[in-house]
Image 1 (tube, one colour):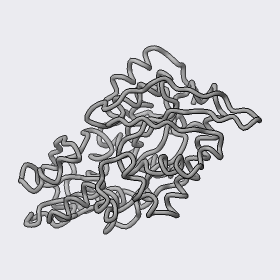
Image 2 (image 1 turned 90 degrees about the vertical axis):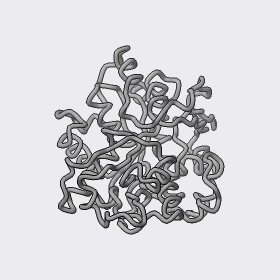
Image 3 (image 1 turned 60 degrees about the vertical axis):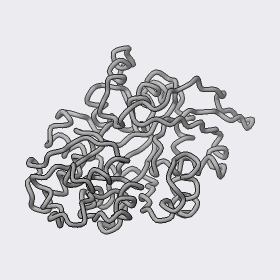
Image 4 (image 1 turned 45 degrees about the horizontal axis):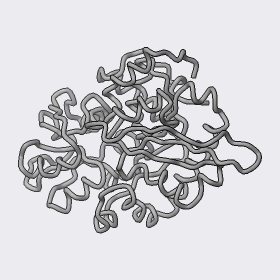
Length: 328
């Protein structure tokens, strides 16, 4: 990452709407800890996260001691999206944050000094069983992705990763993606809106896709997997300034996060158990929902695909240098 740290970037970060979520939902406090050394010192890092299935490895890694083995103590703070997380990381109130890939591409386009350091959730590769799905009413005439053309589809944040992958899925199925009418709706409200006919369909992530199906709704598409079977959906980021000043800590975090992702892959029941420590997902729902593919590496080809699709759909300006998205 080779950009200048400026007050303008901080202001831009606070105004960044594309990093997802319906509100702040939390604030970042001061971080503690000390720099790592050779005497077993532990560095405390604050990490902005969202109360969803996707960040389970972060909590699991802390719980089973993976971060401690890498000289870190993680203090997560929960927010509804980037409206709180991005400014906290940019201003140094938090050292790391969680975001979907499209939001980070949009941040790069606005010269906000952030970069990916570790992978997050990815598509499962199984279109019949992914951790996000387009759901419709049981008696809906919509039978597949092509039928979404001309329909009203609820997504959680307009001009972000959700409309990108829904459009691409409709495009691949032979439908007209430009004819879709997107409406913004919080994930928890999607099943009721579909069942009540307020929208024709909704692109819901877990656990809301499973909740919807338990109420009689049908899944007709899996846009993450259908866009790319190995799609990198989200990841963990830091600021350019923090990465430049603390390369060892950034490497420790990246290594611990990858190890935590692998642990989550190997121990899905522990993932389901840890959900109850930071979300309100009921145990019976946690037992049934589809878990993401907790990736151990970011799929750069998939990131390029999201960039290309975002440019084609007009939600990311042309000219973004993909190399600047990653902290090397």
